[in-house]
Amino acid sequence: MVIENGSEMISGLDLLFFEVNSLEESVVFYRDVLGFEVESMSLSSEPPMARLRGGELRITLAQHLETMLRRGRGVHFFVGVEDVDRFYDQLVEKGADVQPPIDEGWGGRFVTLEDPDKYRFFFVTWTMTQESQPLATATETG
Image (cartoon, rainbow, N blue to C red; front, side, top):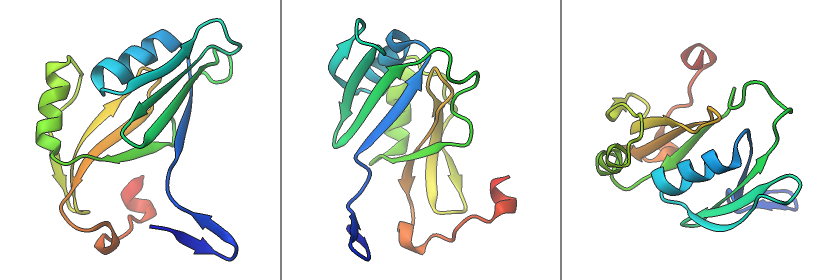
């Protein structure tokens, strides 16, 4: 899907860039728990960085120790999966600290997982098309 706004065209999410406290710990999480492939990793670069890929989604991790005391606040990522129940079983097998999938009234069944820096991911199987889902109001989202 391409969204056009004047002369600008947005074709989709291309890359997530995360500042992390421990590059090694984050790579283990994304590789071993979520199944991302490590494309490159350099502990000697400044800052230390790693590039990972999961399907079409690319993630860059950059170790920055002093930029934030608490990461992950105010940002939530919804990642579509074919079968959230099967995905949950895989996460449990890999030792992830995750609660069973739940159904929500906004059209999805999901599991929630935080990475080592508290970035929150919602892995969701949509039960309604995203276009037909009502937008959450400010009171619903807190």
